[in-house]
Image 1 (tube, one colour):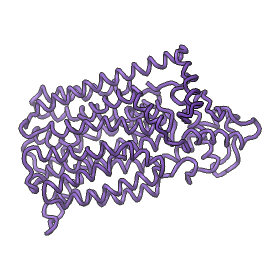
Image 2 (tube, helix red, strand yellow; image 1 turned 180 degrees about the vertical axis):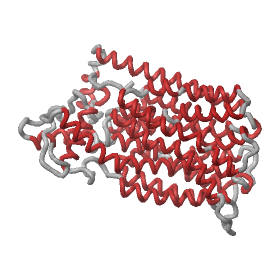
Image 3 (cartoon, one colour; image 1 turned 135 degrees about the vertical axis):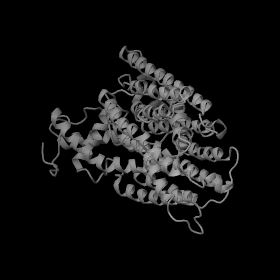
Image 4 (tube, one colour; image 1 turned 45 degrees about the vertical axis):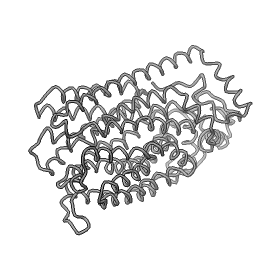
Length: 521
């Protein structure tokens, strides 16, 4: 192999396995340096800004006290965040397809940074509802956008690790959120900023805007133009993605995995990259592929399973200060914020480790099935024991079950949807379904159930059990479908696809409909 600075042409088909691996590692390292830190920072800001309302309500005086909130008004303010958050996800992903992740992702993050700053200046319940609606509108496109952006940069079984690297920042946000909140509430008051909780929003909003600018600088637009790669590396990067998503398939233009003449090195690699472009980067958004996504059982199974998981995820991240207040009623507001920090640390480490295992074994569902019982055990401990030590330990298990399961979950649909339009729509639709969890999650932990919160914990436990059962069903479905394809029972998909092309109903690649395509279980 040549040195990194050598731009000579490289034959894709004639390269040895070792040469391919060396170049692939070099490409992944260069992309990781630019993409992973930027996405991690963006997602960290999302969870910091989202959970900051919980920290603000645990301050003294609290957000609820300052605004005179009564009854279910605080929970309602949490819930309205998800009204526009859910609505915007599919449109946001389709816009991302047009303008690119480099522009769209930092733009929406900068927008909610400005809105978060505004959250520090609300004076009444109506203002809080309006600012939460706007925050949801800005934040809704980030998670599906990051997942699809990464799916356009990495192979299918490299995706879970990269999702874990950025998603681990969600569990870190719980730690940082408590630490930052404890510091921000100490900033001296002014005539305008008359309570410590206001500084939480203002300072975190400023940090969010700065992070958005950093992400714009770091993120490459796409593999065709990534300035961090050499020209040959760009071609190779596109070719390896095409090969990964189009195993043994042939598109209407006649390209296959083995296009190009041996000995014509540049033409060979260019043809593979060109075929990949036809299948992904330049693929047109079409209604048929969107409709096909709505008929995919995996979208609905994983969406429902993710919704059940999010009941735990959202209620935990929003109400952990409230839960700890019930466990340790005598601690100060600052001590309460600090007690939230250790709970997230093991979950962050496990998030990355289990994603590495998931990619190495090339499985998704079994990882969730092995991890999520920890979450279930944690809620059982919270319900069954009145011992503060046992209850606090149970919070660690809840976090260890829920946060490390998400990267494997988020990788399922990008792995199993080969069309660019279908991947974008599936990821967004999955999250639309999942985020319906916000409505029960934000109303579960009411003050009347304090300090033990037996009923709220029981409700979340029920959703956690449904999470496990749903992903068991999806795993069995994928295994069954792979077995049917291996037995030749899906060979008729080719004729159906060719009829679609001839009739002009679709110009998308056969993708995951191919009898040779195998689902990641």
